[in-house]
Image 1 (cartoon, protein in one colour):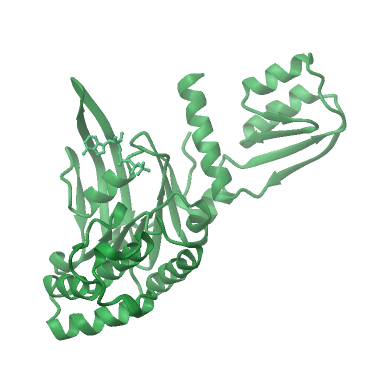
Image 2 (cartoon, rainbow, N blue to C red; image 1 turned 90 degrees about the vertical axis):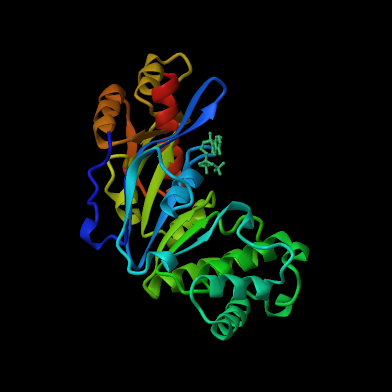
Length: 316
Ligand SMILES: Nc1ncnc2c1ncn2[C@@H]1O[C@H](COP(=O)(O)OP(=O)(O)OP(=O)(O)O)[C@@H](O)[C@H]1O
């Protein structure tokens, strides 16, 4: 069941994707990479797209960024001057020219997207300083470290000051200090009014920056909403029941609890969802209970629960 989470006003969206489908040839058949994905991007907001490997995140980002055609569905963009409306950092910093220097790349991408060369150079130098690469401006990108290449790619995506930013794993291969700088930078860009779509496997980064979160599983949006709402108000709220004793291995209640998806660890039983909580309390009655409380759920906790729930539905 999808939680009843308030969706933002679609008329405010800078970009809206409706029912995206994408399939790739696989052997003699097809692999359905996206099975009807709908998402919106809003100014002054970061939407974080989470999902395990192969869930379809990069495919979705490429379609939203206009780099790949969907097989079905559509993307509506409500920005003036579409040619320069987006900035993108795709996995592996592949949007850079390896034989040009970092600054030459920024000047190239800046002029390509409408800046005059002088302006592009000024913006390029400014951005290289922001990402801590002022000393590497004249070094060819191919000789930079992976993290430095990633930071150059970020600067290149921003050189023309686009209102929409697509960042596919921007912290891949960068050290902790640079990750922290990127986190702060994302928040600053958001405050400036940009609409940002971020994919990451770093759930702590996602939780720190995401105004909204969408979890993609096997090409479908399994959960979407404002981060605080999905963590607090979702029917997937997690309850922790502390028993006055430990259930014995042969206790028939264990199987009943497991059938409801409850986790039992010593004296502690964890339950997802209020309805299940009441059923579990009925099974536990008349055992002594020390306390029943709602756990504050982290994004990492929520992600794993959604994933586990899906796996249980698939594999029983
Ligand atoms: N060009 C392609 N040709 C064939 N299959 C593809 C292609 N691109 C992606 N796929 C497949 O589509 C599915 C979704 O891939 P995608 O890269 O979008 O996932 P992802 O969520 O970004 O994964 P990861 O977290 O590993 O980067 C995967 O099963 C992948 O193998």
